[in-house]
Amino acid sequence: MVPDGEEKKVMEDNPENRAKCHCHYCPSYPEKCEGELLYCVTGSSACEIPVKGCICNTCPLYYEYHLQDIYFCGKEVTGEGKTFLRKQGKGEDPLFYQKMVEIKDKTHNISAVTSMGSTKRIPFSFDDIHFVPAQIKRIPLNQEDPVNTSVTIGPGSKKPLTVSSPILISGMSFGAVSRNVRLVISKTAQKLDVGFNTGEGGVLDEERSTAPEMMIVQYSTGRFGVDDQLLQSAAAVEIRFGQGAYPGKGSYLPGEKISPEVAQVRGLEKGEAAYSPAHHPDITSPQELGEKISQLRKLTGGVPIGAKIGCGDVEDDVKILAEAGVDFIALDGFGGGTGATASYARDNTGIPIIAALPRAHRKLEEMGVRDQVSLITGGGLRNSADFAKCLALGVDAVYIGTAALIAINCQQYRVCYSGLCPTGVATANPQLMQQLDVEEGVGKLSNFLQISMEEVKNITRMVGKDDVKLLKKEDLVSLTRELAMITGVKWLDGDKY
Image 1: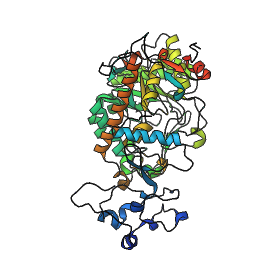
Image 2 (image 1 turned 90 degrees about the vertical axis):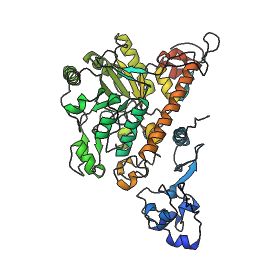
Image 3 (image 1 turned 120 degrees about the vertical axis):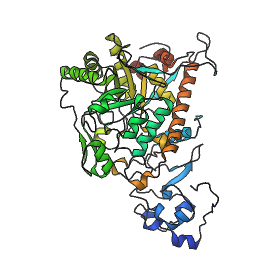
Image 4 (image 1 turned 60 degrees about the vertical axis):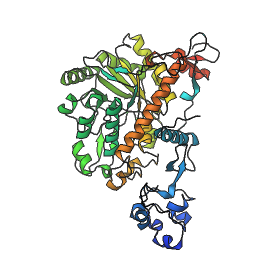
């Protein structure tokens, strides 16, 4: 909370400082706890904090004592990494909060020893699947034994995309997330050779020049900021049909989040809300889909052309996409995050990725094209175990969005739609954006990705393999019969379903 420096004063709770305190003037002041002051000294409020804006950085004490951060009223030190984090909400799922804390710990190079999507509980999860350890039949590898982690997206394309890790950063559009977030992601992609998706909000000039060889350009229904020049600079193109948070529904970015720069990049007027239709106006049949893929492939010189879909009619959708000639398919399951959508859509539409993923993999195998069409999956994935289990169930790579944002600076306040994000992640407000330092964000995201990948490598060693691409469903066992039937992995009795 207080930076290192030659002059570091310790603030005290005394009448003089209370007289200077601005807490009771704040729009987020918890009226039910009237009388509380000096949260920067006394700690968080006993009440829930309504996130309506923060004036911590207007208080004379903030500058007198060289404070950092904002919303002291709702934060506390937590986790092994001693992160100054918003406290757990009274009605919040403890497991959901703990997963966020563990991501924060990894940004401090601390591996756990133990969603902004829907918080709705589903009957099956990756936690109900375990790995089968190598012992005698197969011999586990030692820590020093190398494990290959590189993967290739679109191996059948003229210009395949090879990345150092199967963990990719999913599309999070400029405007939905801040300029600083976009810069953190592109700089991290350059540093680690990891793939990243632009999202549907166009691309900053800095992103295009920083890591073009890792950049997957999203071609959305709104076509914001997408032109031939951008497409020709892409390492891959993803035609976005839907996403897990609201499949079948168009996307929306409120006008209050459309800053002049966001408007310029998206090709809108300042303050004009951005709406993406539910479907592409020029892709309404398999024939038009094939024509669009051919058009994009010719324009880009042969980079992988793929499609992102929410999980619905999995087999039929995958069949049509494969027959149309896509080089990769990105499945986004129920539970995936978003900056703004209606809760009725988010909580009641789509299929969890744990059920959709095996179906897509099986369909591509039945069609005899599994080795030609890469499969990427995302939607509520948070940790290395989730990532490795997806790889074993048949995907080539995984997309992470919310987990990446938490690593960067997000604390799950769930006010993304308002533009008042206190962490500088989902806002265009210049003052709030100061809460996210780009270079610090690069360090945190890099740490999270590197530790997560090291854990995936260790899991691969534990099952006796030296390449993440060799992880198979035979390396898994389900703790429940129902999940064994859904995923096709063995149940505890050793039988396959």
